[in-house]
Image (tube, rainbow over all chains, first blue to last red; front, top):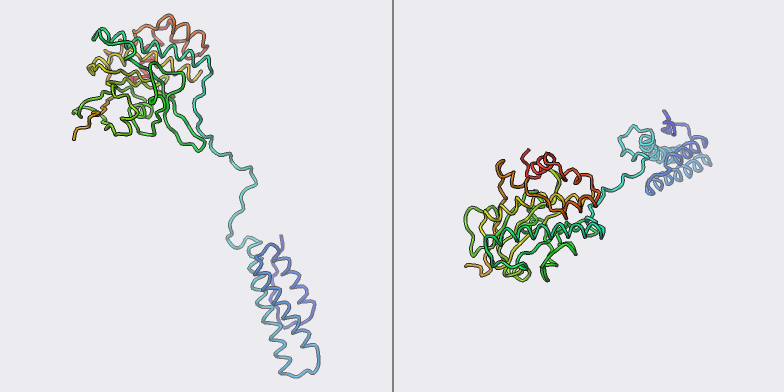
Amino acid sequence: MAKKPKDNVPGGDLGGKVAQSSATLAALAMRGGDTWQKLVVYCCYLISAVAILVISLPPYETLKQLASLFGIVVPLFCASIFVMARYRRLTGEEVAPQPAPLLPPAPPPAAPTSVKLSSATRDRMFSVLEEARVLVRDRLQQKKATLEDKQVRANIFFPDYDGSGNCSLKIRPGLHVHMTEPELGIALGPGQGVTSHVLAYGEPRVAQRLPEAESGWDTTYQITPKLAAIINPQLRWIISMPLKMGESKPVGVMNIDGLVHQFSVDDLYECARNLTQLAMVLAGLAMGT
Amino acid sequence: MTNPQGVIVDKVVPISEAQLAQAVHTPLSETVQQIIVASGVQSLQALVGNPAAVTEAVKAYWNLE
């Protein structure tokens, strides 16, 4: 680090050594300076050098000598201002932006990734999902004997992250029963549908399709033409269970839903409670711990 | 105007301490128990043949603790 000179303002000494010394210091101080600052300093020293040359040549008239002296002092003074400013910055007397510590840059936060399932895990989860569907079907068939097997469906949604970190909920291929297109390709954004609520809040919910909204429900979703084109028009009810162990955040959502026949909310509540352990098993299999 | 497709309404499933028994005592089938054992997942092994562990896990699932 260059040491700050205490008397670097050119005074009455017009010797070439002073100018040369100041020029050297200025050049040293201006290393790394802005280009325009360097140009100003070097121009000042050029003018001073010319003035020194003029003052050393005859005739030694008073007016000429004074003008030359002026031509030496003023540019040196201007140059000294730039040099001083540069020294202050170099010696830290001026508050300057602190350089970043020489530490390796912190790695970016890990982007969330979609749940990965081996084929063996997926097969096990499918078996458990089918157990859940049959459990509900058998229970509801006790209420309505005409309920057919294919009218009770099942699926598991997992968050699906794209490369930019955006998330949507999608039915995992191979983890659905009696589902067909276009519902299999449905993608739910944050806050869309019952499934998103269950994933966000970790609470089991039941849903029904009703001719018009009735009081007493937490959430109402209007069936927009876009949704109507995707959702099976015969869908009547949904039991939506978070896949979680204990109080942990859900990793996915299991839905058991039904076509054609409507059932009472209490019947659906009862089915939901019966699905508790199976939902936990599915969560444990998905998490693998 | 009434939407011909109707509306979808939903609500949180309620559960009481009394109803907890329903969730706890729904037995896991033999098939599911075999799947749990075959999976090797430690957190699930405790649910097989351990009613106390099942009760605690179900309570936690429903946020009843």
